[in-house]
Amino acid sequence: MKIPFNKVYQTGAEDAYVLEAIHSGLQCGNHQFCERVIDLMKKSYGFQQVYLVPSGTAALEMGAVLAGIEPGDEVILPSYTFSSTVNSVVLFGAIPVFCEVDPKTLNIDVSKIEALITPKTKMIVPIDYAGLSCDIDAVMEIANRHNLIVMQDCAQSYGTRYKGRPAGTVPHLATFSFHETKNFSAGEGGALICNVPEWELRAHFLQEKGTDRRLVLNGMKNKYSWVDKGSSYLLSDVLAAMLLAQLEHEAEIRSKRGQVTAMYDRLFEPYFEKGVIDIMRPTKDDELNNHAYWAVFDTTENRQRFMDECRKFEIYVYIGYMPLHSAPYGLKFGYKPEDLPITESIGSRVTRLPYYTSLADEGLEYVYDHMKEVLKEIYGF
Ligand SMILES: *Cc1c(COP(=O)(O)O)cnc(C)c1O
Image (tube, rainbow, N blue to C red; front, side):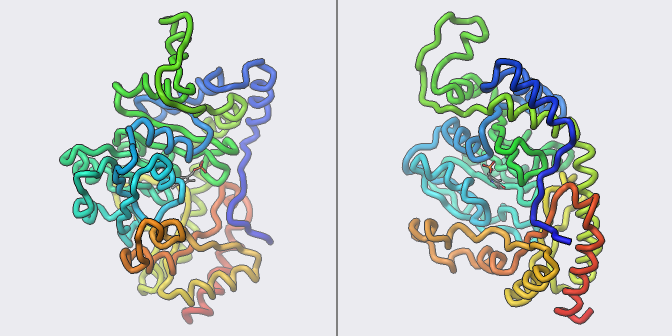
């Protein structure tokens, strides 16, 4: 049996919605299906305002513009993240200031943020790795004390709650991804959440190529004009139709994925207990959306062996992110690998395990049995 790293899930409801969108005669952004997705998202999680955009990357970029990022601004973010998180601010001339991660969560180590703040710091961009929320309360406390903006990269955490509150509802700005590798897929898609009411109108202008078209749609003007900078940060209604089908099946998708997490927990628990492999450790404050599963091995060699042996059974395990500070473009900002030793060490030992919704229907036992065999070979138990 072949177990890929990721596989797109179809609920069966996509076809009818997509056809309806195609034949509606209105296929661009912010039409019927976009509005239904936005309503559903607000109803499910209470977001202040939702903008559907072409990708999680576009959401981050739009957020950076909305936050007023300018050349020379410093932005604090973890080095252990996807390139889009950092590119969104680098594109507008900001200087990335990389922070270490907490080895227990692989999220930003909040205790190390404050030492990185300078008079040039403008924003903090934490991420929710593998769907586990960062300690957003602590990040907000620091940000408020220093008058900084927080944009939370929730690309992986749609549906997660932290201390009872949904991911994306706490910071000034938050972003989601609906890329096919995430829990809910529009193929490519994303959302920007704006929790600052005074920024909402400007966000509409940014999304609509810097025009006040929104005021025309609202009947407040009869001709729109160019009023701000902006771009085309819009998701096509055809893709929103696909996304709506997925989000309407959120409970089903979450529950299937929960079976995948449970299988990996059962598999790795003995190795975690013995201290040779580190795994996700949600606390009672965390309610997870079941996005992904990671395991940090004791040595780089054992990680390699695990990946190689799994591949022999056609199970495709991947290494996680390569740290950004020591990536070719990160080095250009003057970083050296040893500047963030914890991130470097984790980056050299972490794996991301095959994880997708339909794995719950077929392959769970296959993965468990073969991985167990491989782990036994490596660790002797
Ligand atoms: C997936 C992801 C993104 C990018 O989302 P796209 O929709 O692929 O542009 C950004 N940040 C993180 C942490 C991600 O996991």
